[in-house]
Image (cartoon, rainbow, N blue to C red; front, side, top):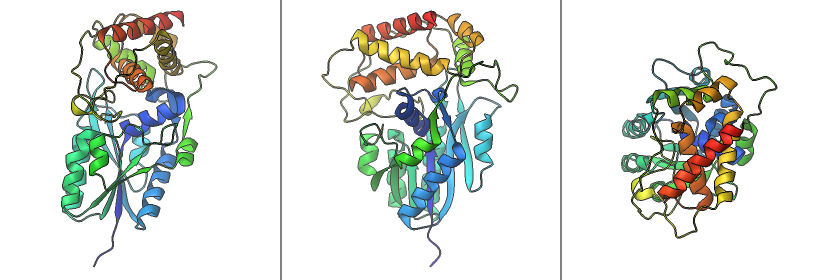
Length: 326
């Protein structure tokens, strides 16, 4: 009988958004600095130690803008025993093809007997069927979740929790050592160290300029679920059976103010004056990345994903008031 291996599958969108929430209080990835090699190594060590098996490989799934990859993605792709798997980022900032690649890899690796135990760092409900199929093919699938402030799994779908063989927490000390709050430099440069690669804040401004629109005014259908869930495709609030609905109270002005201040503070940590001016020109449209963070963070604060039109309007209006004050 051949050597048994484990393998690690990392949904970067989930991992970094959840880690940002743990570190800064908002899901904006641009608000954190990540020691990617250190973080990936700690996850690989945790998987290997838990399984008692050598790690075959780490697969890192993320999205990239057309015809470009970020310096961080190129660094990750060059790491030993790490395979970079990229979907694409659409003009509105949503991720496309990430969960499809991840799900296909899980099933294919299980089908060909490449690994006996798969460790999945994600909370996306869309991966439930892939996990179930991998199990039918004889593999074990363990979900590794980011711990929230209460030491509970952050943003893992109820369906995914039910199907997985186990849900474990990522080592909190290792996570906190590799992910730090991004501090605003004394002088904010207009470009990153590598010419031609925009800052996270500049990317947000570019999306805003490309897709101007008025604030959305619609009410999603209320479908009950049992938890706050991250979606790979949107990087934000889910739809369908995993929308979390409760009877908790409406958002207070204080709730809205706290969420908006945290999101703006996190975004401004990398934004130049030019970035701010560019985003202001897109007003009243809120860039998609920031809009998702506002909605997701307020929903998480309330424990309620059903935000009515009035709340959404107040949230976006307060966001612009705070931006204009900076």
